[in-house]
Image (cartoon, rainbow, N blue to C red; front, side, top):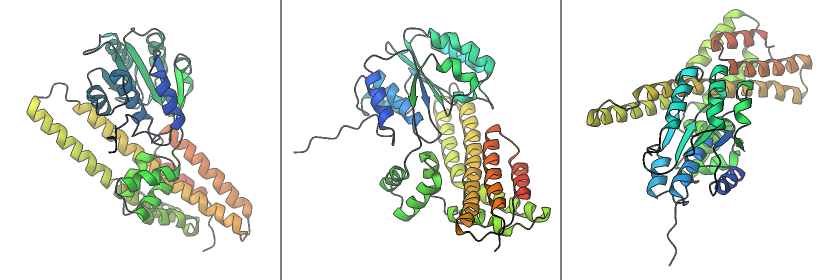
Length: 354
């Protein structure tokens, strides 16, 4: 007879072998704070819940009660903090500090998972520092960030750093196929997601993905130096991006409906309605930004392909175009008006021969 398979708490963490090994060892004698650094969609959020599950359950068994509750964000001794505004404010950090000081509800240990702390306000970082340095003995902090900006450097120095990388395309493909996505759609989504598993899952059920990639790839040959053409192209691309958000919006509607059903059954108190609404706004914003990043990468690829083919009268113009696109991609990190950014970019890009 075959032994029954025990589900691991790490099953949802993809392509992060080194991080999993580090955290598995760390769970034996954990310190007060860890910093998980890596890009969005690298499954660092799943890793944080898995580590919390292991800390509370004491065994690598996803079906153990404490582990199961932690993995599903339902354990009373695992508190997840997500920003309420554009940045994590001093007021929100004050609530983190207050919550950290409270005794665990069930056991002897409590885990605080702090999301998107690369968006930590400078004043809030200073306020959080002392608590991270000297937290209550029962509290372990897991601080998640896409990168370490200047505001986070001092806090980061008080944490054990765990690195997460973009997920290999082949690993994303395997996950999507295992989840029932047809191989062809899975391959296209895995390539377009650029190492982001969360985005790949959205793209895998997105019937308009190829249409959008084709539209972005055609831009260099449709530009004619006029503002009218740029405005029309931006309107077309914005329409395609808005349509791409429909599957995400439908999933969010299902989550909202499930929340309302719980509110009707047990009441409003502690329902998390505001937090869910804020998370949905962030997801839609990130989805739009990801679409622009992916699309502009396709545009840059069109110029690079033209350079490789060696058919351009002015190769330097294509080189300028690629550099200009990279500057626009960097500017997306500063939350600009995306339509104005796209219009300005297209006005500055050269046309390629058809």
